[in-house]
Length: 86
Image (cartoon, rainbow, N blue to C red; front, side, top):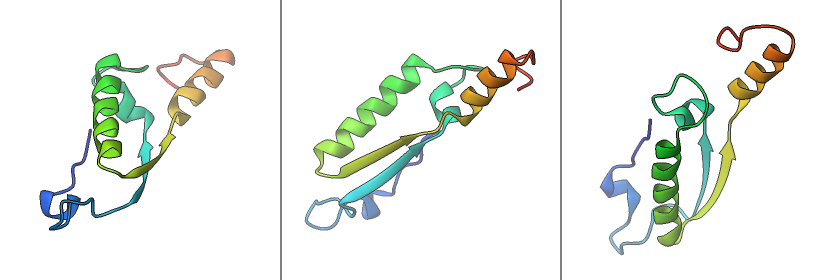
């Protein structure tokens, strides 16, 4: 799931981005795409293209990748729980 900023907020009249620095938090669910678990290579490629485009416009990006669901699933599986249940 991606959320786009309306064009009128994404750049000012000068064509410059409205924000100079952005913190982007990517959830584990966003990285899964339509898969039931794991990472979707197509989703990762699409996100990477968007990130490159934003950076090329002059915006400084910090990216936080959420993997809590992945981590909890691995941890629970090590204790014997089915990963789908975790």
